[in-house]
Image 1 (cartoon, rainbow, N blue to C red):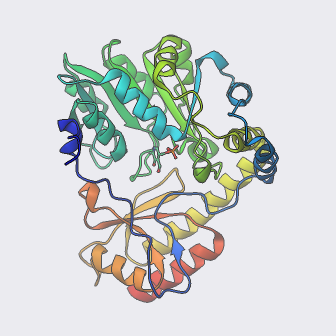
Image 2: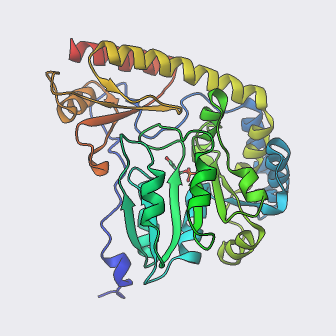
Length: 361
Ligand SMILES: Cc1ncc(COP(=O)(O)O)c(C=O)c1O
């Protein structure tokens, strides 16, 4: 017998990632994890390679990365915290601010793993329904109670792809008490910033609001495997999280890659442009095939198989897999008739489009 885990953790179901294994399939087009299919900036690749020479040392480049982020976004480097992906930062927030007897308000289609982290830390979850897959600010404000510690919102949303209107973050912040921390997970912000008038929330942090903005290098910068994310937060929140953050959790090549990637603004522009084009083409195709598609400000698209189609989402997913195309079923978000497709490379999208067309016509 081994030592029992804390009750909150023992009760948790296993967190499941998509099944990426397709035995017997020669060519697999994996569009299930919202990664960037285009390779990252060549400058990032070079910087990571150069940093390997110092692999016998603990990483030292965090201050440089903070400076680069601060330069690019016009932020105070002292209010930046780097993490091994934004997931590490979410874990720190849950550990630092949740405990038994507290609750966390999350929007219905918020990022599921944050809910796991808060539950593990002892908090109970108050999941607020979205209306038409859009974050409902009135409902979130109404859900905040005396025991609420955190409100967690994803913008642009995953899996919806929907973006809050400019001004909505400010409104949400104003509608909840200042003692309650608003956590804004903006993992897909760079795609939205490319096209829309995107509200970053940085100015609210600067003006002293109780707000933590999470960003990542895993999506538009194409560094998912390098595990680098960052938070922009009030100085006391940064100081709190620093106390429990393992001091060397991000690897040197990852820090070097992230710094080079964020400084390569032209490359980011090109990537976002390419994704927007491929996404637009996919949406047109999906609609022409009778699928109901959510608009998206991101590198993924959520669509529904309406009853008028010959295949349900589950059957379509299975048939796509038989043809080597892996999408993300949405049953875990209570959307059993939806699938989510990450926007892959031009070739991958052509292959996915071809198979989808064959199955639906
Ligand atoms: C909304 C959202 N937040 C956070 C993450 C995780 O980001 P990271 O790779 O920085 O840990 C993901 C990854 O898919 C995501 O979709």
